[in-house]
Length: 276
Image (cartoon, rainbow, N blue to C red; front, side, top):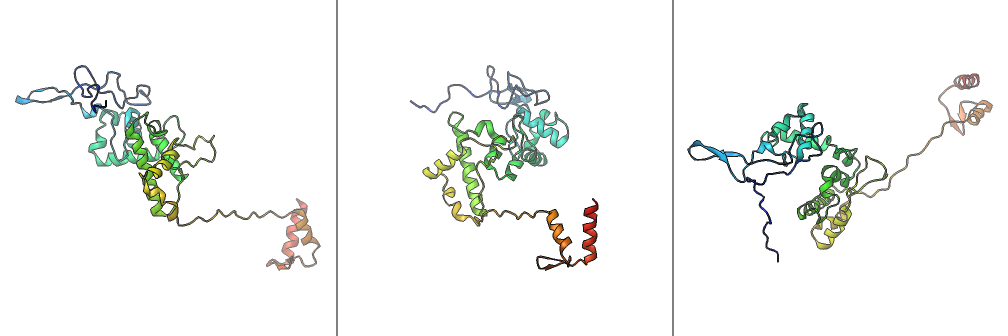
């Protein structure tokens, strides 16, 4: 029977510490320092100006949870933001809550994550994927481990987040009258081409269950479906072409077209070619 209760306490107390958003494998020059023991209880003001540890309270600057305009998170994310914004890897490691309390840093961290953030296992950024028209690639770069593939084995919350992303991309594409590929990857061996596994499944399933009605009307609102035009290729002249000019009694013409150059110019050109 489902009781809707937790099997353990998620409040920080004397026996349990907060350990989220700390990747122990990415420290030193890859991420801010964090410990396996996690974050301890913080002292809070009590009566008579006394301070003592309180269950459920922690220092905000001890944690690397999501902050900023584009959800900077984890110890490695805060180090990258510090390098990009301040040129100091430890700047936001020591005071991560600045991304929540300082509007300038909040927006700068969002720009960094979109334009420069590059997970070490990928060779691309979200911005580069967007320039390719590859929506799935942006998700994989930003939230790949949690959302690509997105399944109930990870968390229902992340599955819903991907559904919301699909719905919003359909809404935006429909409003602009353009089609954006969910996984645009022409060369599967290209490290700069990322895919989000399971994205198409969510795209089709949400249309069937009615959770993304915008996707049903997307193609009907496209402004243009014009085919790609292949540019004409002009070949350079051959020696036979030059011979036609040489044997033509009027070198200023060819195939009925009159040249604006006098005959002396054509003779000079042919002479140079022969000398070469």
